[in-house]
Length: 257
Image 1 (cartoon, helix red, strand yellow):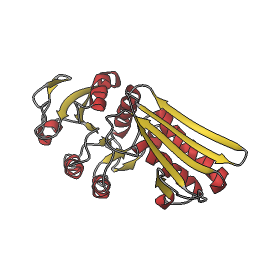
Image 2 (cartoon, helix red, strand yellow):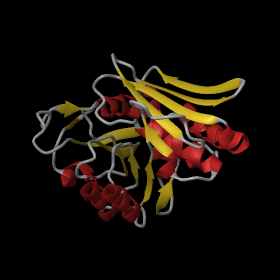
Image 3 (cartoon, helix red, strand yellow):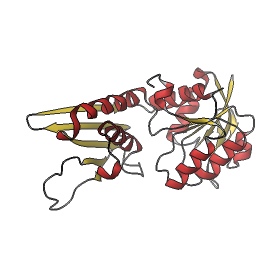
Image 4 (cartoon, rainbow, N blue to C red):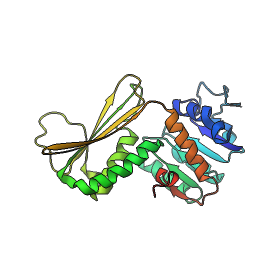
């Protein structure tokens, strides 16, 4: 069995990763929560939850993180210092945090993904091709919906899908807008609009619409269980074992590159 440290262990995703770890050949060797968490000291998959990253990382062969973005630079530095491959599912990461992850990837193999679903990552590749074929003559709109407890908007997955549309078109994120309000005028060509809905217990719905005069093409992905994301993260963790340092993607994991 391979030793796994789970960061953000008591969150929704951490719990799902922990429950599936053994079926992927992992033993949970460490469980980390934020400083002062009421969950510190509680039992989790055979270990006690800690808020000391040095304790959590002891004996770990790989780490999976689904945590708050605060402190991600320090955590990334710790993973790199201990030479532990890292799968990062934390969203809402600042530019400083992203730079820290890139720096860490010089010492360890690392994947940072907004979504670990096989379906979403396949969808991203399809959108890239569709956008290249359709061009800016087709208006691109992205609608995402999540449960009412989600804190960041747009979702990391929506931003990933927008990035794939932009990649297909050969443009940058300057084309993105986030919702509309008031007398905004006619829709300019090339705009990529992202709209965020929140309500109930929705795990994650994403629809990308390409609309032109006379027709509309829609790509939709609906997640009905977080187990799908957890299994993808565990699959990514297995992939990183033994890899050279660097930034990898889910496209690498599932053989799309």
